[in-house]
Length: 335
Image (cartoon, rainbow, N blue to C red; front, side, top):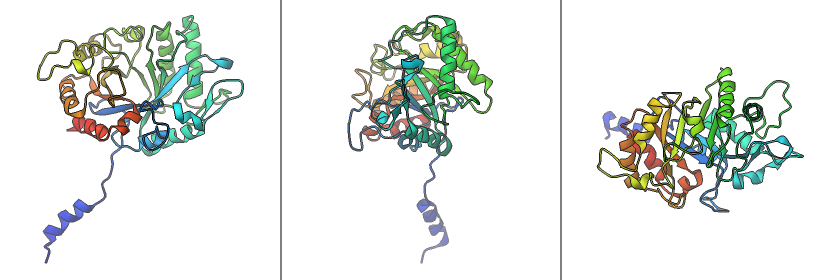
């Protein structure tokens, strides 16, 4: 005969596991942010092909997803352009423009935010961005107003074309890979528009490469724009993850400490969070990929810095194809 004391623990053990979902937390050091939209793993069919957005939002390890990318700010018909690789196959195009109309992604954004609490950002730039920025500060402000009208909350009486319908993103990310003009007034106008809307929390982020200062994003990061987080790319550079010296309290090329100092002494927002940006698979970057066994000590090292906000991954398709990677990173952050 089983005793009650033996049965109760078994009942607890067999109880369904409840996943805990949460969006970006500025006070947390265990956030996981993942870029989605470029199908980096490169499969054209099957389970490892990039899946719809909500598939990744349902993963409790992920707190933030950056939609990659808005590749043109002022394109055909004066409208921006977005590219989400195979996910764009379910979109149409607004007449007279090259702007996609994506009802499936719109529905997924709502599901991600309302069901899973995932923070959704729209990343502007990417490696194919070639506009070079804005001709003047006024031009940059006008462009920011347009981007807000198109991708921010619906505005009464607005005739803006909206790729995500009534859905909207929770903020914007800047991933410029080359020098871009007048980005500071562009970013500051978006910041002002978000700050004026007190209905929810809004976020402004950037994805600089690890060499400091970052050539492309420095005009926004030199104390001129209030950022909530930076997703520093510690890959494809001499200061990438591969340069970390295991067991050493001081580092040479691996420079997370430099970015921590930036956060505390240069950033307009001294509470900005610095993310450790990593490739999520061996084919996600030219250099810098580290498997969980060697990545975990790097995460442990970065956790000593008060600005540390978590890990950023490129990208969602790579993270899923690399079995166990996402879970291992989240465990390293929370363990």
